[in-house]
Image (cartoon, rainbow, N blue to C red; front, side):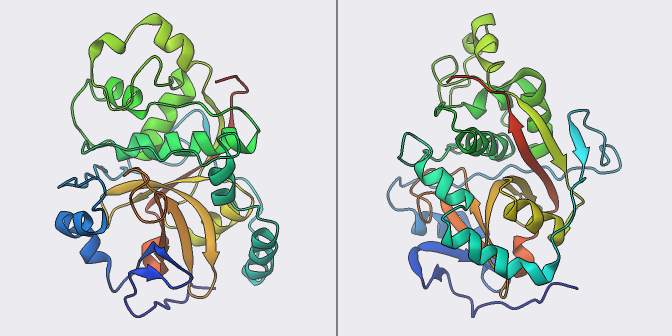
Length: 290
């Protein structure tokens, strides 16, 4: 069944949680305006909210291209079961947002902050890694997405896509801020001990979803798999973590603009704006200490 395109009346805030932003078909253009983002984020006073997505070229990197990723290979959850399973997930406080809010020894895992660089595509996969570690009851590790982006792009402030960073993390891992400080672009961080630490934090199993496939996205979220989500309309990559509602269709994302954005760095995408153009679901990370 096709998705019902039901949208709230341009609401910018979740009426059940006024701290949480809602982005939908009627208001999304405002969120493309850096000045509007400043208005919403008066705590840090940044005058720019960098995005940085380069849309994935599926002709060059089709499904199955990345050796660590399997094409979507799990049974789809039928649409007539979405609401009941969502209700059960919410009642059990078993959504990935619940995991994120308690995954740092009972405290929230801090949001990543790309800090004005076009490195969203590395931060979205880093956030997914953090969620999966918390699901597996592994200790919080302050993973540094700049390490991934700087090496891939040769220290250039340059966009990319989620699968690009995820494949790097699968092969080389991602270090903590002890070895590569957050938001650092210093070449001095690139040393053997950094990558020895990075090897403790690898993806070992992830799924390459079909572009803009709503049913695959929902299946992953209801099964507790965070989805690295690239949105061409936003020129931005984030981590999708929850199905919020079926009608209207809403998902919750974990952004990489710090905890001051929306509700502790998390917000809601609605209707067509909630369907990523490229999606990769993380299932397993390497079992390792922080």
